Amino acid sequence: MPILLWKMVRFGKYKQSLLFRLGLKKTTFKQSSNRIWLHANSVGEVVALSSIYHKLVQKYPNIDLVVSCNTETGLAKAQQILSKASYFFYLPIDFSFLMKQFVRKVNARLLIISEGDYWYHLFKEQKKSGGKIAIVNGKISEKSFQRFAKFKSFSKSLFSHVDVYYLQSNEDKQRLLSLGVDSAKLHVFGSVKFDNVINLLDLSQRQAFRKKLQLEESEKVITFGSTHPGEEKLLLEQLSDVRFKEDSIIIILVPRHLERVSSILEEIEEPIALLSDLSRGVERDSSIILIDQMGLLTSCYQVSEIAIVGGSFFPGVGGHNILEPIQCAVPVFFGPFMYSQKVIANAVITADAGLQIDRMDFSQSINKFLEEKDAISNMR
Figure 1 (tube, rainbow, N blue to C red):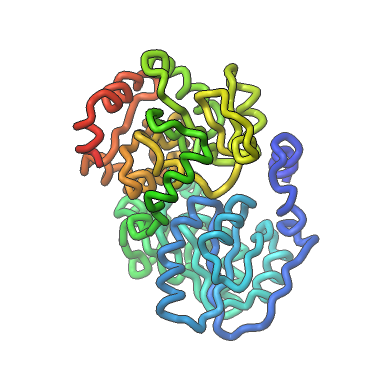
Figure 2 (cartoon, rainbow, N blue to C red):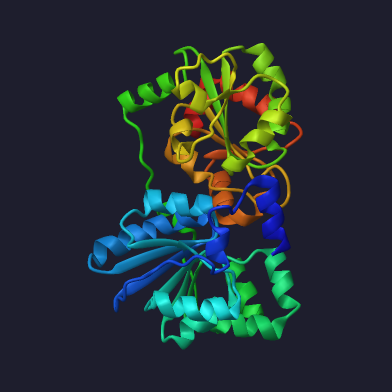
């Protein structure tokens, strides 16, 4: 609770969602005997659910799908890409008295959890209500495993509520086995993010988006996607020589969380153009564009020469989806901290579809790709 309140005051987070998560504002559900509940923590987990969601819609057109998230950005993304769901709502904080009432109201036959959002009272009440629980794209990081291992009795009880796990790797399977999960429940399927389909822009749409960004035909774009605190400054410092050498380079910054826009403007000591201003016709007077609107990351990748995916240059996040720029046929670079995306990172590196770079020395790698057309072509 103190962390939630501090983030709300300091960063403006949770202003829309906090009352729902505390149970002080409620979502009203119509009764349904044919309901599947999809839950994702935030944006990345929503994206991971999208391929499963579309297959459910296709195979069971009469199913009643409902979607919950923990974050406002996650729910906004869900409303965008899981649009045929009946309800979108915030998951209450995992207090027993909140979950007991809430799970009864949702009344889902099946709860599908994306990746690793394990909540004890949510699981317990779902099972008490007679519903099933499935984990898809499941994972358990080394850090989480060490925490769960300290409380094996609690962990065994928590994980025993789940009916089936579809996991990303054998490593995840071995960790869950160590925590007492029945091996019959554990199935390794790899990452479902390989199955996700993104909307590719056609030529006229790409040209329209470039025009919106006020990009000249000769300008080359590098997109920094899903960035976290400190990464924008680090990346701009690392690319100072490249930008000085080639003044046609345009940098697009796409922060993972839009509430950071004001802090980025304060931290970067050079002019930055906001997309919202460019959309209103304000003339761009900077080689850095900051995206302050949701849902445009893949569009930015599609007008780029190179993509650099954030959340991977400092410990704490563990990386984001590096398959998105690859699906846009754009070479992708990412940092050394990809422990939350191990399956994807290993596959990309093995296939020479992307490059993992040192956070303190990657200007040469970027410069090489800008200068050598064959290098870009080969990675595409």
